[in-house]
Every structure is written in structure tokens, then in C-alpha cells.
Length: 111
Image (cartoon, rainbow, N blue to C red):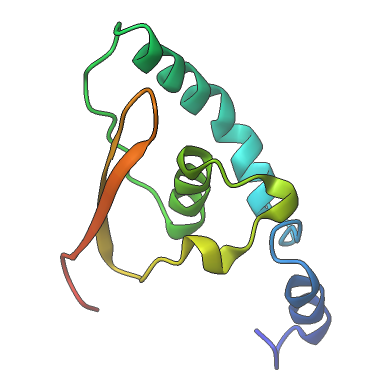
């Protein structure tokens, strides 16, 4: 990306959370898009209405935003390195009404 699009690379490097790819979305956009669903799911945990697993199959940016939501990492202090994920992993984590208890990553395949 740096050699083909140096200006885009520079802008992304300045603030990865707020940087929006051309015709794409930023981490902030993703976080805002998934927030209502995760908030509703979290509220259902508080009322014992929902004990069903939530399955999310997505790319790395969305999973980072999901983990940031449950870890309660605020966007103002959001650092991508706080929610570091390796590529090509399946992420399993358990969320209760009080906290995110644990999360584990297991390699599924290596490209």
C-alpha cells in the first residue's frame, strides 16, 4: 500500500481508528454499525433473556471492534494494538452480564 498509495498510507498511519478507506469504512464506522446489535445482546445478558451463543463470522477489523466493545475500550483511547489479533484464527470468548470472562484463539488454517 505504501508504494502504490503513499498519501493513503500516510493518512491511515496518522490515525488508524478514524481513517476511512476510499469507498470503504473506518474502524469508527464499523464500531458504530455493530454497536446496536452488541448493546442489545449485552442487555439480554443482564435480564437473563438470552443464554444462546452469539456467532460472528467476520474479518479482523469487525472482530477487533467486537472485542473492544466487550472489553469496554473506549473509542477515544482505542489503540489497535490493545486488541491484537493474528490472522487466520478462530476466536472463542465468553461474555457474561458482568464482564468478558475469557477469550481464546485457536489456529484453524494457515494460508
